[in-house]
Length: 241
Ligand code: CAA
Ligand code: NAP
Image (cartoon, rainbow, N blue to C red; front, side, top):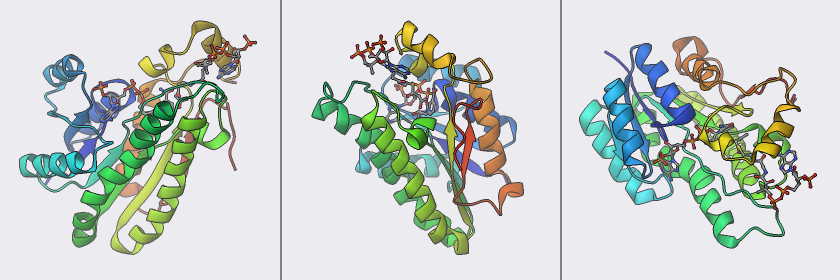
């Protein structure tokens, strides 16, 4: 029987490409999104993958949404925590709201999605949790104290939970993409974006497919011995030890 995968923030950008790649591998796939219903409808029309609307920043909404997905598709075997936002500002200009929105979505969102799914994975003695962190959680980024803190937190969460999951057949891994050509990066002012690309040794932005292939591998049975790892895919921009 096909395994069931859910990708948060799976209607656009990297998440949409991950969802399509998992579908192509034979998984039953669901995606979630926050509010852009037009993008979600277009995604479902193109792929046939059902899209469910709730915010990963809301614990109760996650528990309710996950229950609906499991009623529709079956118990979730693979969770890809991909939903994320930016609220970039230099620290002297950042507002408490910009801090909180990013922490609530990019860090607490990972807790909110994983916690309701965890017990079922433990009972079934199988699970794959893949957290989409970022190069900027590894190296820090000016203008992103909020985002870098949340994404670094995702790596710590991954390492701690991997230890709890290992003896229950659950792997927990993080992927740290570098700058990938999606709406998120296109929102960076052009002059700054050009300066960022000049710092990438391969000389270009990454493609969402290059991250999706990492997810497909970490979700597979071949990756059963890999847990607590941080996989970097950043065109050589930062080489973490
Ligand atoms: N790399 C290099 N230089 C950067 C930079 C970056 N990522 N971010 C800002 N700077 C530089 C600017 O070029 C500018 O330099 P000059 O003074 O020499 O012109 C200086 O820092 C100040 O920047 P701004 O003039 O733009 O200041 P601002 O207050 O108007 O805006 C900002 C600040 C909102 C942070 C804006 O600079 C910005 O959006 N920077 C991009 C930050 C960034 O890298 N975000 C990543 C978004 S994509 C993502 O997050 C995905 C992922 O995981 C990789
Ligand atoms: P994107 O194009 O902006 O797409 C973001 C997706 O997340 C959308 O589907 C969006 O839904 C959803 N989302 C946002 N907030 C949500 C919430 N509270 N609840 C549920 N869904 C929510 O972003 P992306 O570039 O593909 O990035 C995907 C992930 O990769 C993020 O975690 C990001 O931090 C990380 N990442 C990106 C890059 C990069 O260069 N692009 C690099 C490293 C890491 P709506 O359409 O409804 O808004």
